Amino acid sequence: MSSASHISYDDVVTWVGLLAERLHAAREYLTELDSAIGDADHGINMDRGFTAVMAKLPTLPTGDIGALLKGVGMTLVSTVGGASGPLYGTFFLQLGGGTAGKAEIELAELATAMDAGIAGIQRLGKAEPGDKTMLDALLPARDALHGSLDGGGSPREALAAAVAAAEQGMVATIPLVARKGRASYLGERSAGHQDPGATSSHLLLKAMADTFFKA
Image (tube, helix red, strand yellow):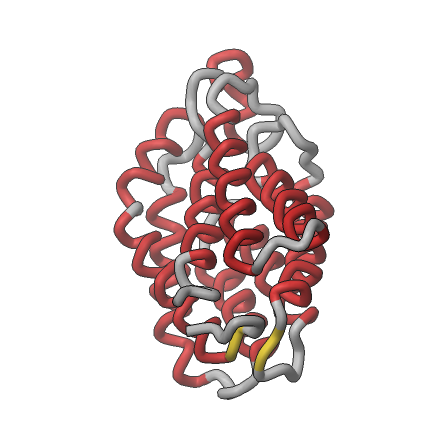
């Protein structure tokens, strides 16, 4: 587990493994969400990608958080179909760039790397808040994470705040009309359904909070 103030390489490996487990468990649920407004493959694609990630992990350099996260990103880009592969791949590649060469990091460093990851998603997907995408979970989480850290919150408190904000943002996608992606083709009919990308983003952050800085 993480020390009081640092996240180790092994912690990051544990987080990725827990995320893979939870995406596998949520495979049908995510696909069901996607069947309402997308191509009915989000859960299948994410599970496939993280199954490939887990197979790739033993071949990646040990002790380098950045190299690990870049390896995750490259694997997702090459194995996940649809828009999710490039978007999640970009997120992890940017995380890796911000943590390159480090065997342990502070949460503030991870938060800065996550800023770059979320900015990468924005550049690639060209989405804005309220477009009914994964950003509707990630952007509030980003702001809550920084707000808690800047206000003197502990790492556990900051991650909990980020998860809570992501969950609120995820649920808030239900009444939205999609303006990006496959769901946007449905127009007003996309309202009333929770966005699958926001849902998997919440899972990512929840797995992070359940791994880092736990007693």
